[in-house]
Image (cartoon, rainbow, N blue to C red; front, side, top):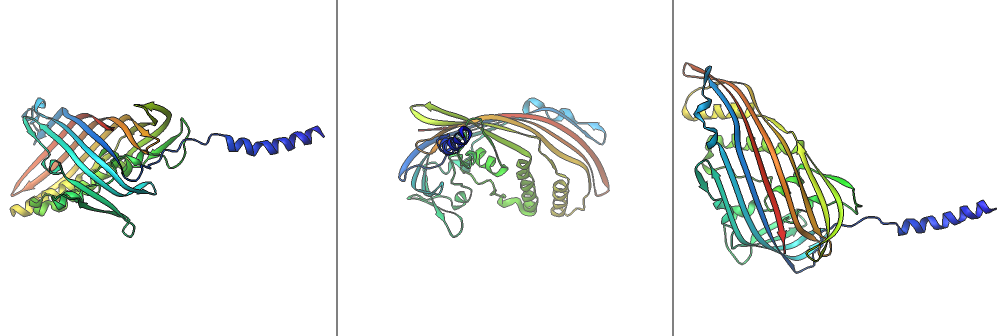
Length: 346
């Protein structure tokens, strides 16, 4: 009889315990309609050639490229103000973005250039309106004018929403982010499926498109894992923290791209080029760690940082002939790069 009473008590209490048990924290995008957030995105990247060997017809040509000149540094700082006019279903249905300040610089060897295309957006305002029929944003300049092509490259999400979990999470819980999501974080505010082919590319346009398509596939072999680290108070805001780990060893076979480029170049010059690409590979060893801090109350990014590192190896073995001459080229390049991506909001 006592056993029956105990069983009944357990059956009664169990649902209550389940109802009271913590189900996790909701990390969602939900800014209030009409609210505005200022954000600064800063990026620094450093690349350098660590080792190079090249031979042409068996003759060592490695010293023709001094390694101390084979480097590139990139830096950019973009400050914006996002006004979330209307928000629904986890996205802005209407957003106004003001590009407040833009500063960019690329140093390659002894030359320094700025990203003029990016800097053209400084001082501009852009509207993003969700088009339910097309399942995409209609993008236009707002109370300003500018280059229409620049709008084609813009993406709405500059809150890094791809890193958020799909539901409530408990501390220690993990989830993965796909390649498309990672690219939307690394290139926040820019479309990663849209790239420009130079107007003067001519016959090489198809080759450039093929090359860019190949490069975009690199992300398919990169794994991004997020882990929920719980909540904390940051700058007086109740926030959630997500640790991020990125790693992968993607590679590309560029034999077809090089073959097409050589053939197109020969056609333009009116010369038949016979080319055999025995090897043309590009491989990367990528890793990085970071953290997203999410403003739980206001429903948008508070801060973010990521420090990626990459080792690059390229190997080619090509034999090419034209107008009775044939040359054999072998080359191997080892390069490395490191960077830092940060976001701060206020």
